[in-house]
Image (cartoon, rainbow, N blue to C red; front, side):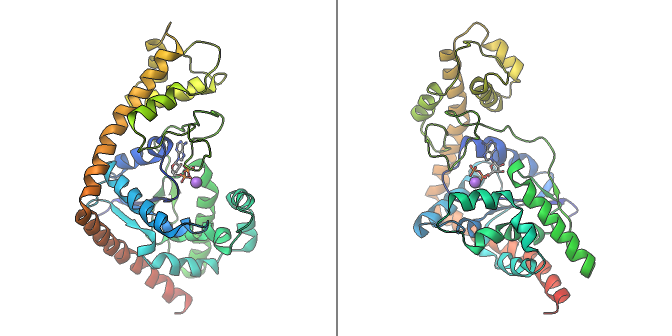
Length: 327
Ligand code: ADP
Ligand code: NA
């Protein structure tokens, strides 16, 4: 078929948050009609930071299950583990030889992560962006929906692809960032100047996708707001603005509709409504996860089938690249 190809992935480190869902996963579902999609559980990226193996394995499976529970049809989308397709590692090695140390030295995420994991600044952490380039180029992806934090890596991917193509002819599709309707950027409930993140140390700052209803409501009630006592969508009220964004994303209402709805009402009522709106979108997702988890054989078959499919496409690109470099 002539659909454009889309690649994206998430790391199986930490439990996914409402931010991951509203900002990425939920939108992936909408993209899956328009594009031929590869959605990977990027477990090879995870080991750049030390992991407990059993936990990583469990989380990787939970993430893949969540992709399906969120509505990604595993017959129409390729949903697979990165580590099940050896082409990622093989292409990554070749691309390493076409990437300069100076380019990698400029990556801000490496600087951040090496500061955070000073006891384990391994070579994998340094060449992480090259593995990411391999992930994308292996499937000849046209588009990559990425958050702002990954833009620098995508730029590098494009530079590597162009460099390789200039040397060897049209081998790689040069990918573009997906610039359609992007999901809301959700901020921490406790520090609304910081994004909600699965690696946040404060568990009250994030709503996790598998949090039970009481926990969700409690976290919303405790969300940091301000003393304005007015549900207004403005930068001066970052906590309230974030709650409006969450409520909007969950209900489909615009921020100004939300302002009108809560005109003259206190933060207590508003926070309760936000909590209930989050529960009402997460509850069906959680129920579906539980159903899927109970059907072990089904998930196993999806994993196997999709790994074969991914390997088929990966092998085509890899063979072409290997010939070009002289293997
Ligand atoms: P995290 O910071 O939670 O570890 P990742 O960096 O693994 O998140 O990002 C996975 C995907 O989720 C990316 O597409 C990213 O843009 C999106 N994402 C992560 N956090 C948020 C957020 N707070 N709001 C919106 N989207 C987010
Ligand atoms: Na992250």
